[in-house]
Image (cartoon, rainbow, N blue to C red; front, top):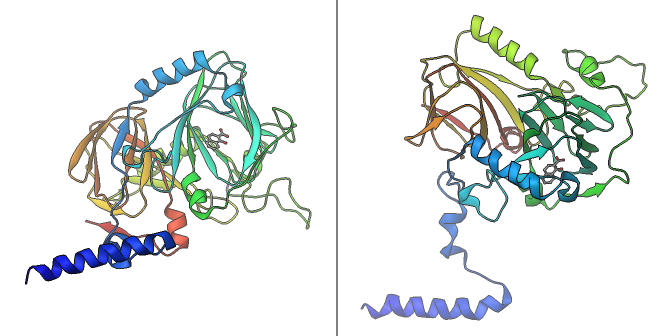
Length: 349
Ligand code: 1HN
Protein backbone atom coordinates (compact mmCIF):
# COMPACT_ATOMS: atom_id res chain seq x y z
CA UNK A 1 0.00 0.00 0.00
CA UNK A 2 2.78 2.44 0.88
CA UNK A 3 4.65 1.27 -2.21
CA UNK A 4 2.24 2.98 -4.57
CA UNK A 5 3.02 6.68 -3.87
CA UNK A 6 6.73 5.90 -3.86
CA UNK A 7 6.29 4.04 -7.07
CA UNK A 8 4.37 6.96 -8.60
CA UNK A 9 7.03 9.38 -7.34
CA UNK A 10 9.90 7.39 -8.78
CA UNK A 11 8.11 6.97 -12.12
CA UNK A 12 7.36 10.69 -12.25
CA UNK A 13 10.98 11.51 -11.45
CA UNK A 14 12.04 9.17 -14.25
CA UNK A 15 9.62 10.92 -16.61
CA UNK A 16 10.98 14.36 -15.61
CA UNK A 17 14.55 13.19 -16.15
CA UNK A 18 13.71 11.89 -19.63
CA UNK A 19 11.81 15.06 -20.62
CA UNK A 20 14.37 17.47 -19.25
CA UNK A 21 16.75 17.37 -22.25
CA UNK A 22 13.77 18.27 -24.43
CA UNK A 23 12.99 21.32 -22.29
CA UNK A 24 9.67 19.96 -21.02
CA UNK A 25 8.74 20.36 -17.36
CA UNK A 26 5.61 19.47 -15.35
CA UNK A 27 3.34 22.36 -14.41
CA UNK A 28 1.80 20.46 -11.48
CA UNK A 29 5.07 20.68 -9.54
CA UNK A 30 5.14 24.49 -9.68
CA UNK A 31 1.55 25.62 -10.23
CA UNK A 32 1.03 27.11 -6.77
CA UNK A 33 4.27 29.07 -6.91
CA UNK A 34 3.45 30.34 -10.42
CA UNK A 35 0.00 31.56 -9.44
CA UNK A 36 0.11 32.45 -5.74
CA UNK A 37 -3.12 33.25 -3.90
CA UNK A 38 -1.73 36.71 -3.22
CA UNK A 39 1.51 38.56 -4.00
CA UNK A 40 4.51 36.93 -2.36
CA UNK A 41 7.41 39.21 -3.23
CA UNK A 42 11.00 38.01 -3.02
CA UNK A 43 11.90 41.63 -2.22
CA UNK A 44 12.29 42.32 1.49
CA UNK A 45 11.88 45.36 3.67
CA UNK A 46 15.21 47.16 3.91
CA UNK A 47 16.63 50.50 5.02
CA UNK A 48 19.91 52.13 4.02
CA UNK A 49 21.33 54.78 6.34
CA UNK A 50 22.43 57.63 4.10
CA UNK A 51 25.59 58.44 6.03
CA UNK A 52 26.94 54.89 5.79
CA UNK A 53 26.29 54.67 2.05
CA UNK A 54 27.73 58.17 1.56
CA UNK A 55 31.03 57.17 3.21
CA UNK A 56 31.44 54.27 0.74
CA UNK A 57 30.52 56.53 -2.15
CA UNK A 58 33.21 59.05 -1.14
CA UNK A 59 35.74 56.21 -0.94
CA UNK A 60 34.73 55.12 -4.44
CA UNK A 61 35.26 58.76 -5.47
CA UNK A 62 38.94 58.45 -4.50
CA UNK A 63 39.30 55.34 -6.64
CA UNK A 64 37.33 55.92 -9.84
CA UNK A 65 36.28 59.04 -11.79
CA UNK A 66 32.75 59.65 -13.04
CA UNK A 67 34.08 59.62 -16.60
CA UNK A 68 35.87 56.30 -16.11
CA UNK A 69 32.85 54.73 -14.41
CA UNK A 70 30.44 56.36 -16.92
CA UNK A 71 28.17 56.68 -13.86
CA UNK A 72 29.66 56.46 -10.34
CA UNK A 73 26.82 54.75 -8.55
CA UNK A 74 26.37 52.42 -5.59
CA UNK A 75 23.40 50.19 -6.37
CA UNK A 76 20.85 49.83 -3.57
CA UNK A 77 20.28 46.14 -4.13
CA UNK A 78 17.42 44.54 -2.24
CA UNK A 79 18.83 41.71 -0.06
CA UNK A 80 15.95 39.52 -1.25
CA UNK A 81 16.84 40.11 -4.92
CA UNK A 82 20.61 39.50 -4.84
CA UNK A 83 22.34 39.53 -8.21
CA UNK A 84 19.48 41.36 -9.93
CA UNK A 85 20.57 44.97 -9.26
CA UNK A 86 16.97 45.62 -8.23
CA UNK A 87 15.54 47.55 -5.28
CA UNK A 88 12.03 46.21 -5.86
CA UNK A 89 10.97 43.57 -8.38
CA UNK A 90 10.36 46.23 -11.04
CA UNK A 91 12.64 49.13 -10.09
CA UNK A 92 16.31 49.87 -9.68
CA UNK A 93 17.75 52.41 -7.24
CA UNK A 94 21.26 53.71 -6.72
CA UNK A 95 23.19 56.55 -5.12
CA UNK A 96 25.19 58.56 -7.64
CA UNK A 97 27.97 61.01 -6.84
CA UNK A 98 29.55 63.58 -9.10
CA UNK A 99 32.56 65.45 -7.79
CA UNK A 100 33.56 69.06 -8.51
CA UNK A 101 34.64 69.48 -12.12
CA UNK A 102 33.41 66.05 -13.22
CA UNK A 103 31.08 65.18 -16.06
CA UNK A 104 29.03 62.02 -16.50
CA UNK A 105 29.02 61.59 -20.29
CA UNK A 106 25.94 61.95 -22.46
CA UNK A 107 23.89 58.91 -23.42
CA UNK A 108 20.30 57.83 -23.90
CA UNK A 109 18.39 54.62 -23.31
CA UNK A 110 14.90 53.18 -23.32
CA UNK A 111 14.86 53.04 -19.52
CA UNK A 112 13.18 55.92 -17.68
CA UNK A 113 15.13 57.53 -14.85
CA UNK A 114 14.42 59.89 -12.00
CA UNK A 115 16.94 61.70 -9.81
CA UNK A 116 16.10 62.79 -6.30
CA UNK A 117 18.79 65.09 -4.91
CA UNK A 118 20.22 64.04 -1.56
CA UNK A 119 23.06 66.53 -1.14
CA UNK A 120 24.78 69.42 -2.92
CA UNK A 121 23.57 72.38 -4.89
CA UNK A 122 24.41 73.69 -8.33
CA UNK A 123 25.34 70.59 -10.31
CA UNK A 124 23.12 69.85 -13.29
CA UNK A 125 21.46 67.18 -15.30
CA UNK A 126 21.09 68.23 -18.94
CA UNK A 127 18.15 66.66 -20.79
CA UNK A 128 18.27 66.95 -24.58
CA UNK A 129 20.71 69.83 -24.08
CA UNK A 130 18.84 71.82 -21.42
CA UNK A 131 20.27 71.95 -17.89
CA UNK A 132 18.23 71.49 -14.77
CA UNK A 133 20.27 73.09 -11.98
CA UNK A 134 19.77 70.77 -9.01
CA UNK A 135 19.11 71.61 -5.36
CA UNK A 136 18.51 69.28 -2.41
CA UNK A 137 15.29 67.23 -2.73
CA UNK A 138 14.59 68.39 -6.30
CA UNK A 139 13.08 65.73 -8.55
CA UNK A 140 14.63 65.60 -12.03
CA UNK A 141 13.54 63.21 -14.79
CA UNK A 142 15.39 61.76 -17.72
CA UNK A 143 12.53 60.08 -19.56
CA UNK A 144 13.21 57.11 -21.84
CA UNK A 145 14.92 58.01 -25.11
CA UNK A 146 16.04 61.50 -24.05
CA UNK A 147 19.76 62.39 -24.15
CA UNK A 148 21.21 63.15 -20.72
CA UNK A 149 24.51 64.10 -19.17
CA UNK A 150 25.45 65.39 -15.73
CA UNK A 151 28.05 67.93 -14.64
CA UNK A 152 29.23 69.51 -11.43
CA UNK A 153 30.73 72.99 -11.81
CA UNK A 154 30.52 73.62 -8.02
CA UNK A 155 33.16 73.04 -5.35
CA UNK A 156 31.25 70.31 -3.42
CA UNK A 157 30.25 66.73 -4.15
CA UNK A 158 26.73 66.28 -5.46
CA UNK A 159 24.84 63.12 -4.53
CA UNK A 160 21.43 61.99 -5.71
CA UNK A 161 19.24 58.92 -5.69
CA UNK A 162 18.71 57.38 -9.13
CA UNK A 163 15.49 55.48 -9.75
CA UNK A 164 15.12 53.58 -13.01
CA UNK A 165 12.67 51.07 -14.49
CA UNK A 166 15.58 48.76 -15.43
CA UNK A 167 13.98 45.49 -14.19
CA UNK A 168 10.73 46.36 -15.99
CA UNK A 169 12.47 47.01 -19.32
CA UNK A 170 14.59 43.89 -18.79
CA UNK A 171 11.41 41.90 -18.21
CA UNK A 172 10.15 42.95 -21.64
CA UNK A 173 13.58 42.56 -23.32
CA UNK A 174 12.91 45.93 -24.89
CA UNK A 175 15.91 48.08 -23.97
CA UNK A 176 18.20 50.02 -26.32
CA UNK A 177 21.06 52.36 -25.41
CA UNK A 178 23.53 54.58 -27.25
CA UNK A 179 26.26 57.06 -26.47
CA UNK A 180 26.50 60.60 -27.75
CA UNK A 181 29.75 61.35 -29.60
CA UNK A 182 30.74 64.13 -27.16
CA UNK A 183 30.75 64.15 -23.32
CA UNK A 184 28.02 66.81 -23.30
CA UNK A 185 25.03 67.38 -25.56
CA UNK A 186 25.10 70.85 -27.23
CA UNK A 187 23.08 73.42 -25.31
CA UNK A 188 19.61 73.75 -26.84
CA UNK A 189 17.94 76.10 -24.34
CA UNK A 190 18.84 78.13 -21.24
CA UNK A 191 18.49 76.37 -17.84
CA UNK A 192 14.92 76.45 -16.55
CA UNK A 193 13.34 77.10 -19.97
CA UNK A 194 11.10 74.02 -19.90
CA UNK A 195 10.11 74.53 -16.25
CA UNK A 196 9.06 78.09 -17.07
CA UNK A 197 6.93 76.93 -19.98
CA UNK A 198 5.46 73.66 -18.65
CA UNK A 199 5.85 73.86 -14.87
CA UNK A 200 2.83 75.96 -13.96
CA UNK A 201 -0.24 74.03 -15.07
CA UNK A 202 0.08 75.60 -18.50
CA UNK A 203 1.80 74.75 -21.76
CA UNK A 204 2.94 76.71 -24.79
CA UNK A 205 0.23 77.34 -27.37
CA UNK A 206 1.43 76.91 -30.90
CA UNK A 207 -0.30 77.02 -34.26
CA UNK A 208 0.74 73.56 -35.34
CA UNK A 209 4.47 74.20 -34.86
CA UNK A 210 6.11 71.38 -32.93
CA UNK A 211 7.79 72.31 -29.66
CA UNK A 212 11.44 71.52 -28.96
CA UNK A 213 10.33 69.24 -26.10
CA UNK A 214 8.60 65.90 -26.83
CA UNK A 215 4.82 66.38 -26.58
CA UNK A 216 4.28 63.29 -24.40
CA UNK A 217 7.01 64.08 -21.88
CA UNK A 218 8.02 67.77 -21.82
CA UNK A 219 8.67 68.60 -18.14
CA UNK A 220 11.70 67.19 -16.35
CA UNK A 221 12.29 69.33 -13.26
CA UNK A 222 10.09 69.44 -10.15
CA UNK A 223 11.96 71.72 -7.70
CA UNK A 224 11.82 71.05 -3.95
CA UNK A 225 10.88 74.68 -3.29
CA UNK A 226 7.68 74.18 -5.31
CA UNK A 227 6.58 70.74 -4.13
CA UNK A 228 7.40 71.50 -0.48
CA UNK A 229 5.35 74.70 -0.57
CA UNK A 230 2.42 72.86 -2.15
CA UNK A 231 2.61 70.11 0.47
CA UNK A 232 2.85 72.66 3.30
CA UNK A 233 -0.18 74.53 2.00
CA UNK A 234 -2.13 71.32 1.71
CA UNK A 235 -1.23 70.30 5.27
CA UNK A 236 -2.34 73.72 6.54
CA UNK A 237 -5.75 73.57 4.92
CA UNK A 238 -6.82 70.07 3.85
CA UNK A 239 -8.31 67.26 5.85
CA UNK A 240 -5.71 64.56 6.39
CA UNK A 241 -6.00 61.19 4.66
CA UNK A 242 -5.98 58.62 7.48
CA UNK A 243 -3.94 56.08 5.46
CA UNK A 244 -1.50 58.33 3.59
CA UNK A 245 -1.19 61.54 5.58
CA UNK A 246 -1.11 64.63 3.36
CA UNK A 247 0.01 63.27 0.01
CA UNK A 248 0.59 64.84 -3.42
CA UNK A 249 1.45 62.95 -6.57
CA UNK A 250 3.78 64.41 -9.21
CA UNK A 251 2.11 64.57 -12.61
CA UNK A 252 3.08 64.85 -16.24
CA UNK A 253 1.58 68.13 -17.54
CA UNK A 254 1.09 66.54 -20.99
CA UNK A 255 -1.70 64.28 -19.79
CA UNK A 256 -2.17 64.62 -16.02
CA UNK A 257 -0.84 61.08 -15.59
CA UNK A 258 2.22 59.74 -13.81
CA UNK A 259 5.65 61.37 -14.20
CA UNK A 260 6.80 58.63 -16.61
CA UNK A 261 5.01 55.65 -18.24
CA UNK A 262 6.44 53.10 -15.79
CA UNK A 263 7.03 55.19 -12.66
CA UNK A 264 4.74 57.03 -10.25
CA UNK A 265 6.12 59.40 -7.62
CA UNK A 266 4.65 61.30 -4.70
CA UNK A 267 5.50 63.23 -1.55
CA UNK A 268 3.71 63.15 1.75
CA UNK A 269 3.69 64.94 5.04
CA UNK A 270 2.70 63.15 8.21
CA UNK A 271 2.22 65.62 11.07
CA UNK A 272 4.09 65.17 14.35
CA UNK A 273 2.25 62.70 16.58
CA UNK A 274 0.10 61.37 13.71
CA UNK A 275 -0.08 57.65 13.05
CA UNK A 276 -1.38 56.52 9.66
CA UNK A 277 -3.80 53.63 9.44
CA UNK A 278 -2.52 50.37 7.99
CA UNK A 279 -2.55 50.06 4.22
CA UNK A 280 -1.09 47.69 1.66
CA UNK A 281 -0.75 47.91 -2.10
CA UNK A 282 0.73 45.84 -4.90
CA UNK A 283 3.30 48.48 -5.86
CA UNK A 284 6.52 47.76 -4.01
CA UNK A 285 7.90 51.21 -3.17
CA UNK A 286 11.15 53.06 -2.56
CA UNK A 287 11.07 55.93 -0.05
CA UNK A 288 13.41 58.72 0.99
CA UNK A 289 13.03 60.47 4.35
CA UNK A 290 13.24 64.16 3.43
CA UNK A 291 12.54 65.68 6.85
CA UNK A 292 11.77 64.64 10.38
CA UNK A 293 11.66 61.18 11.81
CA UNK A 294 9.49 58.42 13.13
CA UNK A 295 8.73 54.78 12.62
CA UNK A 296 7.50 52.69 9.72
CA UNK A 297 5.66 49.59 10.88
CA UNK A 298 6.03 47.18 7.94
CA UNK A 299 4.39 43.77 8.29
CA UNK A 300 4.34 44.40 12.04
CA UNK A 301 8.09 45.11 12.27
CA UNK A 302 9.18 48.60 13.31
CA UNK A 303 11.77 50.43 11.22
CA UNK A 304 13.22 53.58 12.74
CA UNK A 305 13.38 56.44 10.23
CA UNK A 306 15.88 59.30 10.23
CA UNK A 307 16.55 62.07 7.73
CA UNK A 308 17.88 60.90 4.33
CA UNK A 309 17.27 57.23 5.09
CA UNK A 310 16.16 55.25 2.04
CA UNK A 311 13.85 52.28 2.57
CA UNK A 312 11.82 49.67 0.72
CA UNK A 313 8.24 48.60 1.34
CA UNK A 314 7.72 45.43 -0.76
CA UNK A 315 4.48 44.65 -2.60
CA UNK A 316 1.51 43.74 -0.42
CA UNK A 317 3.26 44.30 2.92
CA UNK A 318 1.12 46.34 5.28
CA UNK A 319 2.61 49.66 6.26
CA UNK A 320 1.84 52.25 8.88
CA UNK A 321 3.82 55.40 9.62
CA UNK A 322 4.14 57.15 12.98
CA UNK A 323 5.76 60.58 13.00
CA UNK A 324 7.77 61.56 16.09
CA UNK A 325 8.57 64.81 14.27
CA UNK A 326 6.79 66.15 11.17
CA UNK A 327 7.71 63.47 8.65
CA UNK A 328 8.16 64.32 4.97
CA UNK A 329 8.66 61.40 2.56
CA UNK A 330 9.36 61.09 -1.15
CA UNK A 331 8.24 57.77 -2.64
CA UNK A 332 8.18 56.13 -6.04
CA UNK A 333 6.86 52.88 -7.43
CA UNK A 334 5.52 51.09 -10.52
CA UNK A 335 1.90 51.96 -9.63
CA UNK A 336 1.15 53.55 -13.01
CA UNK A 337 2.56 50.56 -14.87
CA UNK A 338 0.38 48.17 -12.84
CA UNK A 339 -2.66 50.39 -13.41
CA UNK A 340 -2.13 50.23 -17.17
CA UNK A 341 -2.05 46.43 -16.88
CA UNK A 342 -5.13 46.44 -14.61
CA UNK A 343 -3.06 44.80 -11.88
CA UNK A 344 -2.86 47.48 -9.20
CA UNK A 345 -4.66 46.75 -5.94
CA UNK A 346 -4.67 48.44 -2.58
CA UNK A 347 -6.29 47.52 0.69
CA UNK A 348 -7.11 50.05 3.37
CA UNK A 349 -7.15 48.37 6.76
C1 1HN B 1 22.03 55.93 -16.03
O1 1HN B 1 21.87 56.36 -17.29
C2 1HN B 1 22.28 56.85 -15.01
O2 1HN B 1 22.21 58.71 -16.44
C3 1HN B 1 22.40 56.40 -13.71
O3 1HN B 1 22.82 59.02 -14.43
C4 1HN B 1 22.29 55.07 -13.40
C5 1HN B 1 21.98 52.79 -14.13
C6 1HN B 1 21.82 51.90 -15.12
C7 1HN B 1 21.66 52.30 -16.42
C8 1HN B 1 21.72 53.63 -16.75
C9 1HN B 1 22.44 58.29 -15.33
C10 1HN B 1 22.06 54.14 -14.42
C11 1HN B 1 21.92 54.56 -15.74
